[in-house]
Length: 385
Image 1 (cartoon, rainbow, N blue to C red):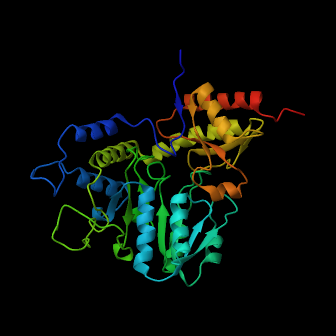
Image 2: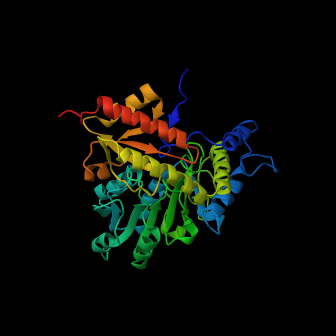
Image 3: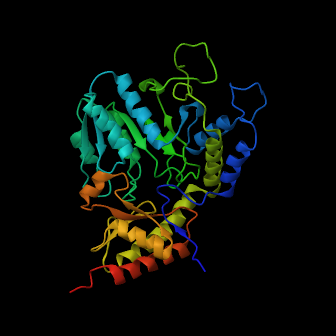
């Protein structure tokens, strides 16, 4: 009998999805596409408006029009970073950290290459960004600071409130990448000192791939970098200035956004605090047992998120991942996780990442640990004297 698969790659994309998420997408597909502004139907379901209100409520945002839907967190970060530079209109100083994902690093480096900004990357000394590291690197020319709320490698969560108060008091635009925290760690963006907060749909909000968005506090600080149809004001020569039309163009992903709405409702009903408590219990078990396994190296023994990255002595991460899948039906993530600088700092050419969701179980964690222990004993090289 084939063992059931164990999916521990939720920091990439959550699976399984709650039944109501799949039903929401199916319901949209089962009817004609009721596109507001693009159909003669006047009593069509307002998938986008409903989802916008749901997401706004979830993030503590009082004005739903300040929630912008995009195709992903990467799309959101590109729109905000390049849109900020376009609006700023002259070279500026930008700051980020070595904990960041390429969806932050690459847009900023592109601006640097184009001469639109000078970029400083904080080289962290631990899993958390220290306030003095930010203060030391800020200058009078610092106009943009981009920091990830949660690391997809170390599982650490930054103190956005403290960092935001420091950054915004200097007049810089504070952009937070919440791809790893939205849905599994408290993050009421509307009540935090942030200028923009990015989320994705397909991770811990349990939506489908191809969905995401951002909250923006003061939209006049960012110019749109895409223009096109909006379903309204078709005679207008330029992109509308009002929200959300300023940043949303083209046909929306109706099934995906309906699924994101259902996923957000699911998370809100279950409760982020409950989700965090359950995941912390499983994470603590994994950290403790793996930390006691000879040959295992943990890169952060105290993660704030259910994200554990490790390696085995004398084994490549890709080999470990291959064996876990082929021999034990355990799905993880290997390699650099699109975050090369932190791997450079922790001195690894790639790690094995276990990441949980509220759909994970303790039994799955126990089976995964047993598999890793067996691999360490039979294929690791630590026992060779």
